[in-house]
Image 1 (cartoon, rainbow, N blue to C red):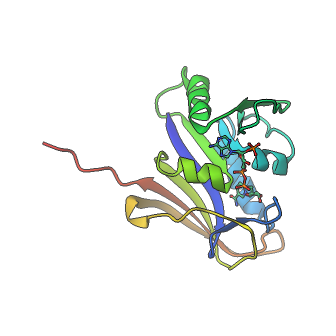
Image 2 (cartoon, rainbow, N blue to C red; image 1 turned 180 degrees about the vertical axis):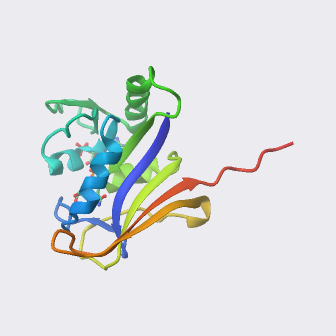
Length: 174
Ligand SMILES: NC(=O)c1ccc[n+]([C@@H]2O[C@H](COP(=O)([O-])OP(=O)(O)OC[C@H]3O[C@@H](n4cnc5c(N)ncnc54)[C@H](OP(=O)(O)O)[C@@H]3O)[C@@H](O)[C@H]2O)c1
């Protein structure tokens, strides 16, 4: 299984404000849906509550320390390693290139980043007010594979660049 992170990040690394997304980016939501449908998605309890319901046609895996938490239509786990195990179980009949997505928020991205092989980042070309931040990324650990600019318009508050990165593989030892 390939583990990937997917996030929309402002220039100051803001990803959220008052437990919501601090922007309207319709193109980004469309792309998020296209990429994640049919795949397990792993998220923190606050992100799950912020979305408000399990997203259709995806296995939602919600991470919380609260052992009494339940969420209709989602799988609840109590640690990030349990989330990975569950995503693996969901994908065990698929091929090894099957992808699972970590969709946030900050605490979960922090745990996931060192384990992810692929990063889908929507880079928002603006400094945005917020209270939740994407962790610092060591860019020398990533190759850029794809890059696509999208301008601001009526349905997109800011111009964005959608970028796909893959982790730099360590050189083979002989
Ligand atoms: N821009 C983006 O791409 C993007 C993506 C996702 C979310 N967001 C935004 O980010 C904000 C929410 O993110 P957040 O960082 O505040 O919260 P979060 O990561 O979604 O959820 C945090 C919660 O997850 C649980 N958790 C975290 N680490 C855990 C661990 N190691 N083991 C067990 N449970 C763990 C805890 O739940 P309990 O407290 O229940 O124990 C914790 O309070 C919102 O504003 C949302 O809109 C933005």
